[in-house]
Length: 260
Image 1: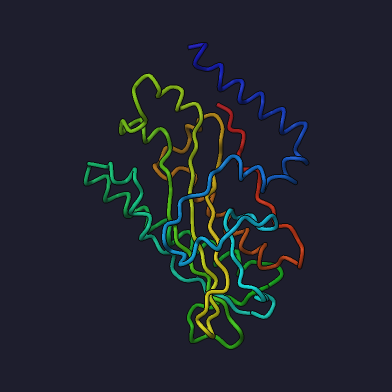
Image 2: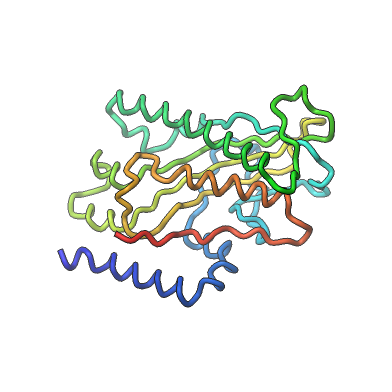
């Protein structure tokens, strides 16, 4: 038992040391740090030309493409489309679910998460102190140059406790080690569309983790901290909309310290 808990204690001490001595450094380098810690999700197909995307140091997302000459300042209105979930149903781990009742509940949860993501993005823009965009409820309300934000949830990895309960986490001898680090991730793909012309003027995609640390026993639902990740993305959309030329929009430190 002592041997099993030692790596977790070591991780806590190491993270604490970083938090105490290197907060400023980690915050300033968080976009680069995330690139090392969190691998981008495979292209799901929501974005038509994913190969033209690249990592941009001034954006918090892992893959970005912006049409040359596009000026977001020219647009004053925004409409957020319902979040697409078709690609979520293609997740590998979901295909391994054999219990029909459980699978049905997961499908309902995915729908709820999509509505939550949409509503959170709308809320963040409506509560933006800068009032950068007037948020439209329908296309008929458009009076000025408007953008459409189209999002697709493409991945939410279940928490380790769920995988263990369903015996998907590997041989029995590996489960204790796997449970020490709970890497719960979510990913999305997005498009910005000019609602006057119908042209896509920007695309972006990101995978993020809520925490990389000791197992948090307070969140044992299959989708773990997905809502927290979506909250972070929603705030980042607003920051990008408000960014000044040359301004760096950084990603939060891609881990939190979660004590036992």
